[in-house]
Length: 126
Image 1 (cartoon, rainbow, N blue to C red):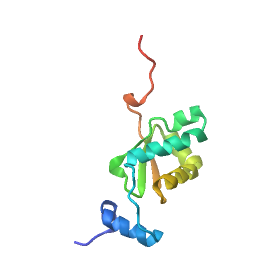
Image 2 (cartoon, one colour):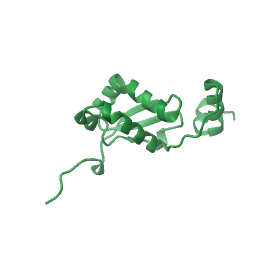
Image 3 (cartoon, helix red, strand yellow):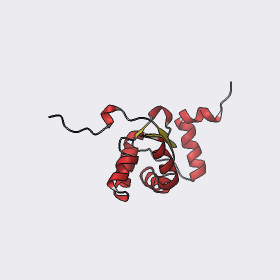
Image 4 (cartoon, one colour):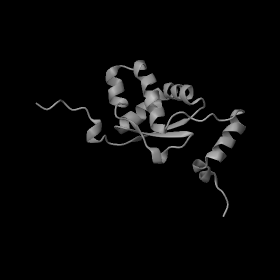
């Protein structure tokens, strides 16, 4: 049985080698987990949007760790409209934020996932 390109998603040595070849420099270790990288990107994106738009599109968004790799983040957002809007209008800003944080280009895939109750903001109980 040989290697296939899909196997390289889970092989850090192969990914580091490919990045060295394509970027022309060694991969520096990412100082973030996928979740903390996304949180840092959200902190950079928040001032670029109105509060209501940020809340509607990105509040409660989270990385799907099992579907993410060092080169690709899969991010669950609250609804299909958010997926469409983020892909059509915010993708360049998101890409810039991630390149600035990670130091190399990454692919971000948005998927629609209903928010969990713990993700919702609810008024305080009397």
